[in-house]
Image (cartoon, rainbow, N blue to C red):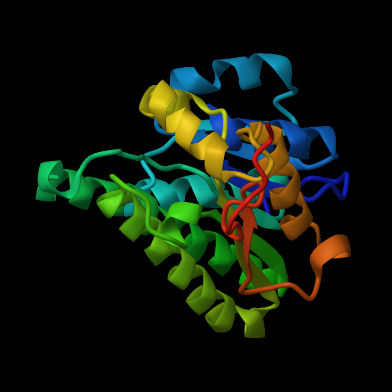
Length: 258
């Protein structure tokens, strides 16, 4: 295989790597010895990553995850450059906070296309390469909005619910090939997307109902993604949806901090 990596380092592809959870995951994997193909729709968003790391260990590519041909090309290039593909992280996504009456069919379709079709295409193509080696791990970024209903999330929540079910189906289909498939379901995270969407009133509501009384930092989600990718830590974990939400999913009546 061309340009095969001789270091024995594991290799992963991460989508949505230009910001937020994807960026934090890319940085953490590089820090922990992985080679990474960092993918984002906007090439400019990857400039900071590219400037700070060796081209030997980091492949940076612009890719529309909803485009089947682009996905096949970038996954193939990553596998060829590193000589292996051990992990794939589907972090690319889009969100909207709109009342159901204000949600157009066009917006609904666009969110489904990015969040569900994009996750499926990257997972399928990465899985094909992993199957050749008989091992690998895929981690999809879902959301607590896919596990329980929240206001304004008709399109986003439906898309993340689909990602959750897709994760479980892929875990079943790919287990015979030695490939594990799991998902993280974050609560609110301090990402550029969340900062653009959440008003101060939204923040007050979330902080009221999250037992830990705060938003997560992207690296806190990335560390769980790394755990699910790392065969030495999670070799018998597949088909799981791990809520990383400060207790939000499981909360009932919670203690008033006052």
